[in-house]
Each structure stands twice: as structure tokens, then as C-alpha cells.
Image 1 (cartoon, helix red, strand yellow):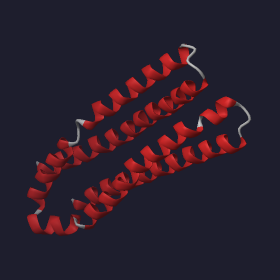
Image 2 (cartoon, helix red, strand yellow; image 1 turned 90 degrees about the vertical axis):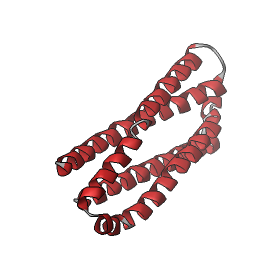
Image 3 (tube, one colour; image 1 turned 90 degrees about the horizontal axis):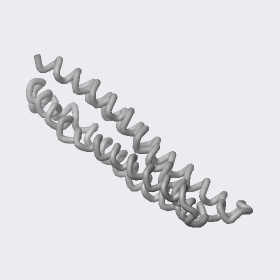
Image 4 (tube, helix red, strand yellow; image 1 turned 120 degrees about the vertical axis):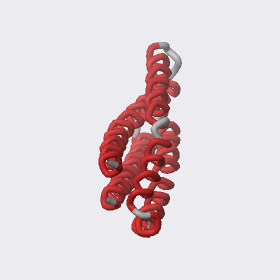
Length: 164
């Protein structure tokens, strides 16, 4: 049973590496725009892309660390508490983070709404650069939510089947 839990954590770690990688790519894009961009629009992307870099690193790096730490203890926990209690504990843990999915969708919706407002009104090139960053942020949260929720639902189904 705990092999499914290990697979879950490996998926979380992979997802976190994608978040870190996306942040690094956005940071590189920001640097390239700043140093090689010829337009004010390109140069204006520097700060928003650096903010996304920091945000993505702040999300991804702790995810990697905590999931690696927790995954290392799964086998011991499974052997200590037994399969039945392990399944109950995992079901509770999975249920406890379900509230994050509506929050991530709300972040996406707000990001898109603010970005569209900034793009619609003539607010200047720097604000339009922030709109681009908000569109990237909103899309990122929606994509992460999509894959994470799919894995969570699959894992929960396996746990519920094991509980029977």
C-alpha cells in the first residue's frame, strides 16, 4: 500500500521541480529582456519576472524539501502504525489539503481579472508588464491545480479502496 504513497510523494516532488524550473526560466526571460530588450515593454518585464522567480522558488523549494523528508519516513510509519491506521491517516491528510484547490482557482481568476483590466485600460507599459506576469501566475496556478488535483483524486481513490 505504501508504494502508492511513495508514488504520490514522487509526483509532488516532480511537480515542485517543474515549479522551480518554471521560475528559473521566467527569471532568465526577465534577465534577457532587461539586458537585450530594445523596447520599454521588454525592459519593463524585468521586475515582474524576478518577482515570479522568487515566488516560484518560494513555493517549489520547500515543496521539494518537505516531500523528500516525509517520503523518507513513509516505510517506517507504515510499519509502525500498520496498514489500516496508515490508510486512515493518509485519507485524513489528503482531505486536509483539499481546501487548497478552490484557493488556487480563485488566485487564477483574480490574476486573470486584474491582468485583463490592466491590459484593457491604458495604464502604461510597466503595468502591462505586471499584467503579463499576472497572466503567467494565473495560468501556472490553474495548470498546477489541474495535475495536482488529478493525482490527489487518484490517490484518494486508492486509499478508499484499501480501506474497504
